[in-house]
Image (cartoon, rainbow over all chains, first blue to last red; front, side):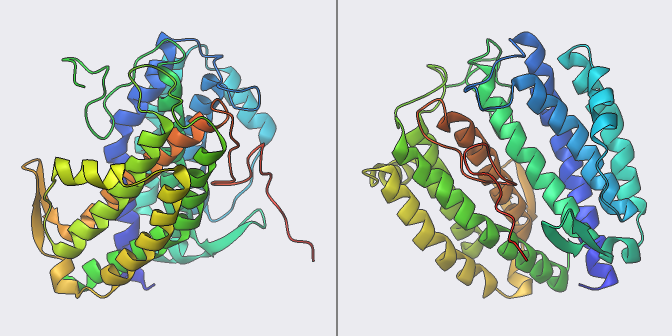
Length: 171
Length: 173
């Protein structure tokens, strides 16, 4: 991958994440209309935990890729999560923080985006690969959370097309 | 988008989708270990419906990009989804079909990938950019299906890391 290609790929994913932001924020917000402690199984994360995970991980993964290092401070993440009092605050944080994170991504130099990074010994690759991971990881967890919403008493917003809960009703 | 960029993006998504095929196949196969009729709500798709939708639509998206045009035939989609007798059939279809489509995708020249196409009147864009839509749609529905698995009596395979049912295996030195 050369400098032009890595900038092209970073811009492509910045645009994708930007385009997904309204749908992701809607899904996070929808947690507020149901039981946030719902989990489909005792081994599963609760809706609340997934919502916090999406909001924090999307920012942390992209920011870490741009900064060129992965360091996870579990205590700091826990402290930040404890500041959310309801799912509306998680959605608001996401709406506010992600555009700033994407600004950092777009400002990153080709050298920074090409820098080889190690992700806790599990994955290695150029920094831009972890932006791809951030994007796909986010959609995965948003899909999970969307599957919780009806069972927890909330409604599924439109994501890649109309949902059966959308107004006006679609089948 | 120029032809070189289109070719680069197609190669990128070829790798991304290819590396996801084994994971998606595992999630589809996991439906066989539980109640395939499970749905979290009466308005939701059942696990088997969702699994069929993932397999057929991932293949449809790639074929449409290869063909350079989007046409949706509901009857053909219904027939394609009803060909499956079990979740194992769905997983086997996916395992066989996706590498074939990815091979055809990789053989496309850059100028064909950069050609603008219409997506059902909603948008026009270079055909290669619809690989992003294909990828996102597949990941989204696989995430949904993964959330069904324990409640339907199955187990969640490792997806973007270990799961409680399939913890990450770290190779020893």
